[in-house]
Image (cartoon, rainbow, N blue to C red; front, side, top):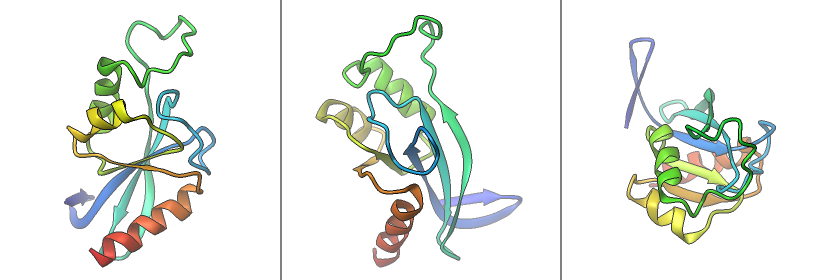
Length: 130
């Protein structure tokens, strides 16, 4: 995938990391409402947080709903649409149903409890060997 940034084309990809505090991958997919979208540049092996993507489902913003939405296909699809520019999805836990739905969008879902920095660096190492 080529990423265009400030008019320069770079070889890279994006990663969405479910993190409540911005350091560790600490959110279960069914409860995550904040993702750090990370832009990886493989030409120089650097990365940066491009944006913080909040997931707010239309119609439930003020209801206080806290149940797991990983079993609701419409909500999983909504998340996939918000993060569709990403190749990898880093979460602390994800069930088989949301994984199947996300597979339709070509996400590679990875469960981990690492820090974002460590996980992104591992993915860069993996991509380098591919």
